[in-house]
Image 1 (spheres, rainbow, N blue to C red):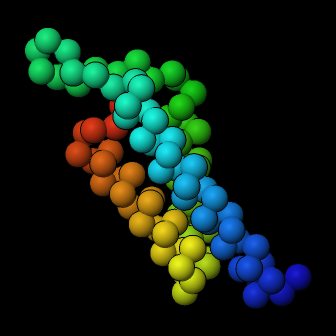
Image 2 (cartoon, rainbow, N blue to C red; image 1 turned 45 degrees about the horizontal axis):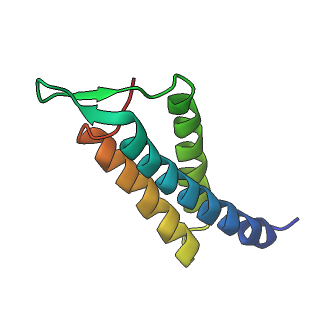
Length: 95
């Protein structure tokens, strides 16, 4: 298998993982995050979500970097950066 053939397959991994990462992040924000009476965020995120999120984020980042000059890679990297940005802002429910 040549590097070009590997990149052709990895571009779809990047696109699929980016879509799953973005939608999963959105679902966790809507379903498991709420503001309590003190005005602070509170989470009921299941314990297994954060490690799965981290592995999916790493897969998205690596596959996006491998296939960089293609539109799938730009979408994957944008999705990974968006999720990290929202996490740094404190809007993602990390238990």
